Length: 364
Image (cartoon, rainbow, N blue to C red; front, side):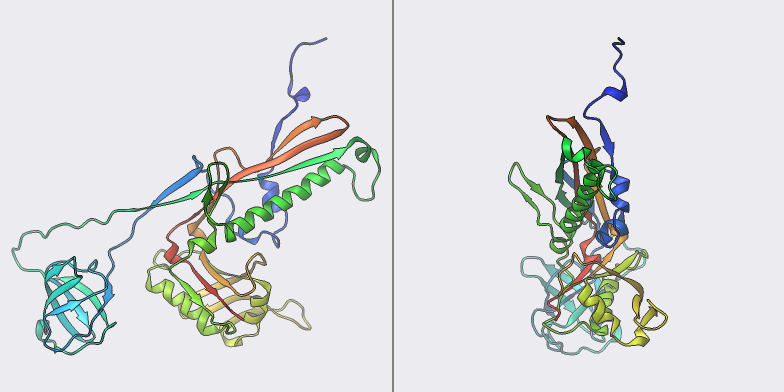
C-alpha cells in the first residue's frame, strides 16, 4: 500500500466559489453584480485615507450692513489673508481672520465694486488671493487627509445531507449535496448584499459588522417628505453631486431603486426618460434617466427600502474580501451518516468620498 498522501484522499479541501457567487442571480444581488469584488483588505479593520480641496464658499451667520467691516461666517476654511471674496455682486478683501469667533475683517467695495447689505445665510465665496508684483511667497496651507475605516464581516452557513438522502433519487437533482451547496451560496450572497446596503458598523470584541451604504451616506440625504418621487428630486440629487465636484473625474453613476420606485419613475415624464419596450405590445422599462448633468442608468434593487432611492458612483465603491477569505467552500467529508461542509467568507465595504453619493428617503 502506498504511503503517499495525494490530493485525492485529502479531507477538508478548500474550493473557491467567488465566481459562482457573482454569477448566481443578478436580480437577487444587483449591487454585487454591478460592482464586483475588489482586491483584498489586509486587516479586520480596513482603513483608507481621503483628500479633498479646501472649501471655496461658506455662509454669513449674521446680517451684514453695507458699511460693516466685519463678517461672521459659518467656516473660515475658505479664506486666507488678502483673499478676495464675493458677496452677491460685491467683492471684499479679507484683511484679518479671527479663528475663535469665525469673524473676517473685510475691506468693502474691492476693485470698485459697490458695497451692499447681505442677509444672514447669504453665501460668501472665495475668489482668489490678491497678488502684488514682487511680493514674498504667502504662507502655505495644509489640509490633512481624513482617515476612514470599516470592519470586515463574516458570512457563513453549513451544508449537511444524510447518507440516506444522498442515496435517494430525486427528480431534477443528480447531486443533492451540490444542490444544497448552491442554495447556501445564494443565501450568503444575499446576506452580503443586504449588509452592503443596510449594515451598521459594530464591534463587540467577538462580532464585527460592516457599515453599509445607508450608514455611510450622510451629507447628501434628501427627505422625500412623504411625496412621490419626481424628476425634480432626481435632478436635484445629481445637481448636488455636481456642485461638490463629484463628476469632475467622470465617475460611473447609477440610481439604485426598489421595485416600488422603479414603477414610479417609469410613470414620470417621457421626455426625461429613455425607454425600451419590455414587450412589443405593452409595458415599458426605464433604462436611463436624462438630466442636465448627464444620463444615468436606473437599476432595480429590491434590497432597498420601498421609500428610498440611492445615487452612487460605482467607481468609488469597493467590496473587499479579507486577504484569502473570499467565499470558500470547505468540505468536511463524511461525518457519521452524513456529508457535511460549510461556506464562509469575510468582506468589508469601502465607500470613497461619501459626498459623491446621495440618498432620497421618505418617499411615498
